[in-house]
Structures are given as structure tokens and as C-alpha cells.
Amino acid sequence: VQLQASGGGLVQAGGSLRLSCATSGRTFSNYVMGWFRQAPGKEREFVAAIDWSGGNTYYADSVKGRFTISRDNAKSMVYLEMNSLKPEDTAVYYCAASMSKSATMNRVRTKGYYDYWGQGTLVTVSS
Image 1 (cartoon, rainbow, N blue to C red):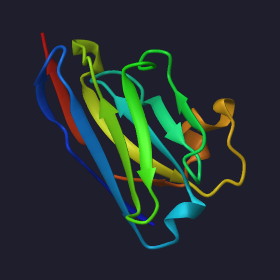
Image 2: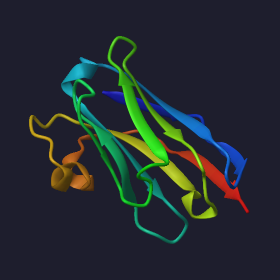
Image 3: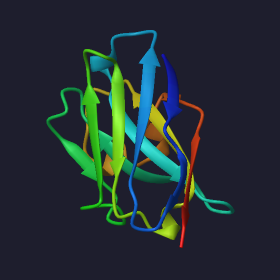
């Protein structure tokens, strides 16, 4: 499966952005989808994930209450709505797909859980 993230840009603190990730190649609803981010000089970290139907979502504590992950299986798209952005949210954001048949918080937040990665989209939050 191929993943294409988009929607990044420059935004002031307190602002909002919506990231999108388009997928192609296989049945989208078979995948757990996740978003990760990587700030300069830091390791890639988990942001959010959503299970096959969208019935369960998972968030890093740092974004809980500010970010919302969603998916549209008919369009093979996953989204990350980001509100109340902070300068520390500045990073390259990556979408990822997992073929796993099991989704728990402990699993979806690990990079090794995912089988496919898209290229990143840069989000810059100015203070």
C-alpha cells in the first residue's frame, strides 16, 4: 500500500491544521492507521491511531484533547485534525498503516507495529 500525507504548513500558536493521508493499493479498511511525528533532533514519536472501522482511537497524552484522528474508508483516507497548536507540535508528520489484526494502545504506539509509511508533511507552529 502507498501512503501520501499532505496538509502541513506554517501556523501560529493556537491555530489549527488538518492533515490528510491518501492510501492506495489494497483494501483500506484492512489497516489500522496511525500518525507519528518527528521533530528535529528527536526520535519519531506516536501521535494517534485509529482502528479498522474507526470505532477505537488512541492518542498520545501530549495531544489528547487537541488532536482528532478520523478515517473515511470509502475514500481510503485518514485525517488528523490539529487544534490549539503549540510550538512543540512542530515536526514532520508521518502516516502509517498496519496489517495487524490486533489493536491495543501498547501496540499501536510502537513504530514496529506498522508495515507501511508515507513520506512526511512538515508542520511548523510559530510562537
